[in-house]
Amino acid sequence: MLLFLLLCLLLLLLLLLLLPPLAMFRQQQPQDARLSWLASLQYRVAWRALCWAAAWQQQRLEQSTLHVGRSQQQALSWCLQRAQGPCCPLRGSTDLSAFRNHLPLTKASQVQEEESGGQLPPPTSKQYHGEASLQATLLGLAALNNAYPEVLAPGGTARVTPTSPWPRPLPWPWHALGHVSPRGAKDPGALLLAALRSPGLRALEAGTAVELLDVFLGLEANGEELAEAVAAGNPGAPLPRRAAELREALQQGPRGLALRLWPKLQVVVTLDAGGQAEAVAALEALWCQGLAFFSPAYAASGGLVGLNLWPEQPRGLYLLPPGAPFTELLPVKEGAQEEAASTVLLAEAQEGKEYELVLTDHTSLSRCRLGDVVRVVGTHNQCPVVRFIYRLGQTLSVRGEDIGEDMFSEALGRAVGQWPGAKLLDHGCVENSILDSSKGSAPHYEVFVELRGLRNLSEENRDKLDRCLQEASPHYKSLRFRGSVGPARVHLVGQGAFRALRAALAGCPSSPFPPEMPRVLRHRHLAQLLQKRVVS
Image (cartoon, rainbow, N blue to C red; front, side):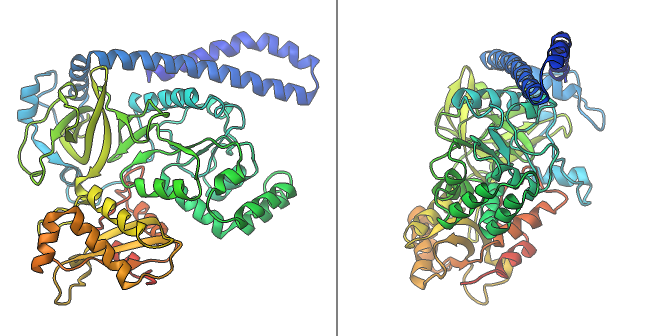
């Protein structure tokens, strides 16, 4: 909040200093020149303000990561002092041992049940709050500009989804920094049309990768209608030549479509969250081939837990910052995730080790196990740099075999690679008991896949997934050999099946933001939604 007020004050002072010369210059210029000069002035003022605020946040981050122990102590004190609800017996104390002893580890599902009192939880907010979200936005914009200097120039960026990848969009200067999207627009069609009318784009923004995947699938399905709207000038002036370019680009298929529509495009900006890797892989292989992907932060269970300061590095590296909420790391032991273990602080994390994130904030004073597992791959000053690898809640287990999200995705990727011409767009898994589909057979997995380039699945292709799973997991292979677990059953669903699933998930009152795409479905009505759309 303090940073926001200082930013507003700086902008006000700059505007006050510029008003007298602006008024004199305005009287001497024709109208078109006045508008162009004013837009240029707005851009320069906004850019100066952004650079100043980002530099201040970078300095604060460097100091906090250099003295991570002190920073975490301050974060814990902040959470305890601002704890909501019943009086906190730890308020005013920052003793870590007392904190751990008084507050046992809990899972995210337990916290939700306690807060809701067994009732339906309230809708999750679609907006991040606090300094962490502002820091992620400012540092992300600065990092993006350093890596791709032209994307924030006027007219260089368009958002094509109602949600934004930036955790906390900035006030007035925001649209002066390159956006061609209509202000306040929430209609996906209007956002996409504005982007299609601007061939000079250098960056595309979408809330998440799965949302962008839906945009490109919809663009293919409704391309002719969109071209007609561009040609007719709905909205804006008629652009028949641009409409012809759109039709020509669509006729050449999905591969490289983004660069055919926007030849100067350099980067795609989305907010990373659980279950997005498949959508990113599909976009990189087809529509967004040849483009870089950048996420300013990683969101887990509705909160920001990682900052991306390195757009030029391989995708998926995040710094765990030491500020609020208070972060602990729970060592993950293979096959023993449920065993009690002691948490470690950020400075105690060891490179190469895997940890589950544990967060404590002031809204629900509980040491919440998020289920998101990270691997430490480096350090920045004294803070760990991590890669998010899987979510414990997305594990398949019908006989205690524990097939993790990362293991299953890798096995499925190898199997799809053996299906001629197939590209995986999306997938979901169900333990057969959810669908009551055993009918006397051994417990097994029901796997639903959406593909591009393959309309039918042969029995030979379906069997390849089970063989890949056996290669990935000796325990699963042993259970299959003994007949305790049946072969995984693979179903091909029609186009739009997972879009319908995401719509159903978004309609849930407790849906997190951004929506973490589940890969293992636990609710029958969601599994049946995919089951009804099986085509092969």
